Image (tube, rainbow, N blue to C red):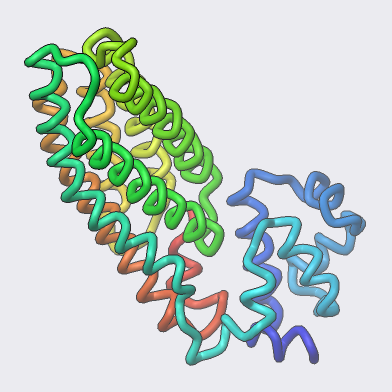
Length: 276
């Protein structure tokens, strides 16, 4: 049938996949009905594998669940598919950010210690480059999450992205105008980032049965570093688990990208295991 040609997936696997996606989004069958204009009985029969839905029904369900319908429809689920280029760009941005962050932290510490007012153009350039690369990396994870749903992680990623946009804007304003001193709000900024990292850690902890217990280890590192950074007194100690956490994020991201490229269907072993 048309939908089988599109998805290379037959019942009951298709119903199981839809059920997993729905639960990952925290939706009941009744709530899913409201999003895709189907009736509850139809959803129940599809998820139980009793019926094979038409392609437009699958399309409606996938779109209601924020699944990558267009990429699946255009052959992303085929055996020789490739992971989208933007995921690789997100990973590359993450690697660049990882090294830039060391320069930024060093320059920031030196700037606060010397009590300077307006910032140098080199410091400002590093600030902007660090923000852009980290934002690209986080957005890469946002897009990756749509392939491997995790609602908690998705919210945490957008929260982190928003926090970065706010605080880097304040930093740039302080450096350009000299009307704010970085040290005046530095502890507040650290505390908010600590909360965001802890939230990210909880998001990764929500992934289960993937790559042994690696996501849980990464999540624990994020949670620990977030708590230490939030406390203020443990900032220096928090840098160690934070560094390991960010390395873990990069490793998990490229592993996931490579597995997406090798998987031969949306219901592959990888996709089935990479569920919260």
